[in-house]
Image (tube, rainbow, N blue to C red; front, side, top):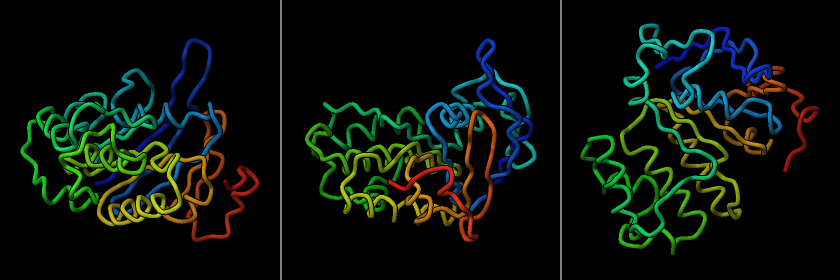
Length: 225
């Protein structure tokens, strides 16, 4: 899978949120998205997920599907986990995942999914009784349930303890071997730990775009947390 973004712009009245964003996202890589609050990260992710439909520019998937004219088809290829990780906490884990599966009109292999995400033994627990880390796992399972090719994760490790943080990072790294992952974070160390590339947004523009393998001076933009 490949996603090509060309001259993407988004404004709200007279406020320019995204300014001429152009980049390519490729299968088998994790792309880190850094930026201060208001830089345009959330808007970019919502456009790519099809949540925001009014924008200027071009977004193509595999050089054949245009997001403006094939939104439903492209959305079926996307998994999106927003920052607040909305869950129906009165449901049991498997009950909730079954509900999500029905929305996608699929019958998933629950055993395989629960094992992959580390939820074996938790499927009959109510979501509200789970720790923050396991709630994140449930959100990630719901994001992956339809086997998406493009995964958008907004602050997926926010609020986790050190052990949970390492576990979730390892899961993301494993997924990134075969999928496109766009990972938004405020944590510089997270970018260094798991991302293949980094994109820094400032005032709606890309001000840095490089592989993290290079000696990129990211610290001039953000301090590690």
